[in-house]
Length: 102
Image 1: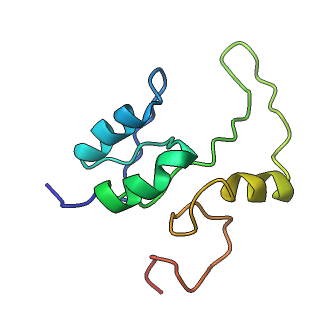
Image 2: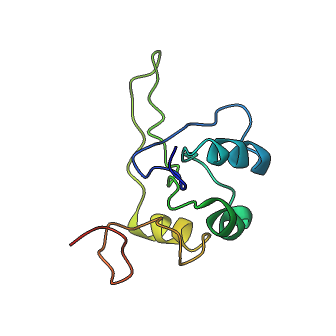
């Protein structure tokens, strides 16, 4: 088992999106796809969290195939500001602090 969660993992939390549920997923070395913004700093420090999802959903489903418009850059940037700078919640723009190999 790796010491830190794998960046290639994504474990969706559908019914229980609590901090305790995130901790449990991270304990098993998986990345939860949702992390409450107020818990992100502690989960980064204590559990090795390295990324979280933006959580913009298309609205499409099995019964309704219509998608909502994509979020605006302003909406995405506002969501990004909810999380600490050290998280890998990115806007797709490369930064010097990126953990990706060059």
